[in-house]
Amino acid sequence: MKLPGKTVQRLSRYRRILYKYRYLEEPYIFSHDLARLLNINPVQVRRDLMLIGGSGNHRKGYHVKELMQLIGEKIDSEKGRKIILVGIGKLGQAIAEYLSDREMFQDIIALFDIDPVKVGKTMYDIPCFDIRDLSQMIKKKKVSIAILTVPSDYAVTIAELLIDSGIEGILNFTSVRLNTPENVFVQDFDIITSLEEMSYRLSLK
Amino acid sequence: MKLPGKTVQRLSRYRRILYKYRYLEEPYIFSHDLARLLNINPVQVRRDLMLIGGSGNHRKGYHVKELMQLIGEKIDSEKGRKIILVGIGKLGQAIAEYLSDREMFQDIIALFDIDPVKVGKTMYDIPCFDIRDLSQMIKKKKVSIAILTVPSDYAVTIAELLIDSGIEGILNFTSVRLNTPENVFVQDFDIITSLEEMSYRLSLK
DNA sequence: TTTCATTTGTTAATCTTTTAACAGCACAAA
DNA sequence: TTTGTGCTGTTAAAAGATTAACAAATGAAA
Image (cartoon, each protein chain N blue to C red):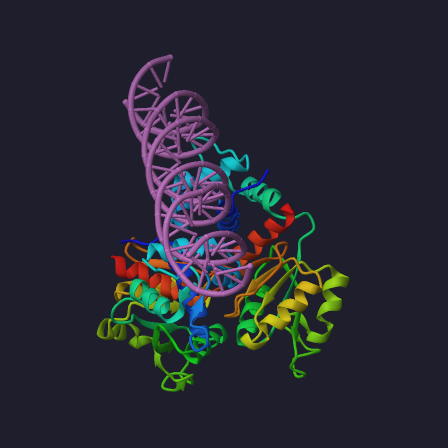
């Protein structure tokens, strides 16, 4: 049963909130608490939870741990997907640090760069390899997701390399739009567009 | 006339493509070219352009410069909005560099940090100030958008400071969800959720 | 000229997402 | 016990976004 994309996004966020609450004395949480913490509508929370077959107590709310468990069953893949990060400039480092820091749901297994100073080192507890080993690693370790943080000039070339090597999804932090086959998912992080959209929305007020 | 949010996002992206094409010999472009470059449907392009009253030639397509001009009229605010970047760690630096590099549509006027080594310097052509001057600057210069890249522990405090000082929109790169009043827009860049959503989509295949 | 292939512009249909509405349950307090 | 409050679970309605369908226009080629 396929969940709506927006619902999956929110489930991911619910889980992170629940995670913080997991050792609180009161093991229950109300839909309106989750809603308030995410600035959304409580009905939406209940609807999302209904879609994954969650159920709460009419007087106490939802059981925190039960709910975390259930969300995991619905949105996690059985054997966690492997992730690599390509391009360890400032942005890549920031992301590597952020992702290695937290108790994670997903696993970064390698960093890639061309800089010989970085290659061979371990940064933020993740080993860094030469980009020439990229293709082999993807195939051998069955890596499914790549986070792309190389300079714009390299974006297309590296993306093609990733795709040819069998990557299934790319989180694209470059300013270049990638042309990918249908079976490769791309998610763009586009700061310019975000700024322009926000600017537009502000001018409507 | 209010444009759909998704349309505004795409208009922003059309414009950046048109910008690259602006000096080409052939000053026209087809809807299916724009579509291909963005991995979307040509009908969608034409529909978006229809919404802003754009018109093309049935045989040659849309005039590149005319279209850029038109998009600007529809989505830019008259006097470009002022932007600041708060928190100049690795992520903040990466964004500052990225935004100062390109010929911009939006203007970053200042960086803010607490590190005395950074304060007073000019980084990527943008002056860096002490975070204690944040509130005053927002009020005095009528800053409308802040890009928030401080460490998670400071996110809530700094966000409150921004809001109290009258900021209208926040691009939130921290892992913390901000609770903001209705009239302050927040746009989250949530890498964990993006990874989890992508993982889910891949498992559907 | 006339025909033809191609593209725009627009309306309608479909699909997705959000919000409203409300019945029914659970516990607390009277 | 009974009443009342405040929550859940679900269906229905509304809003938002994408895609399909097709008439009308253009200019190139026959």
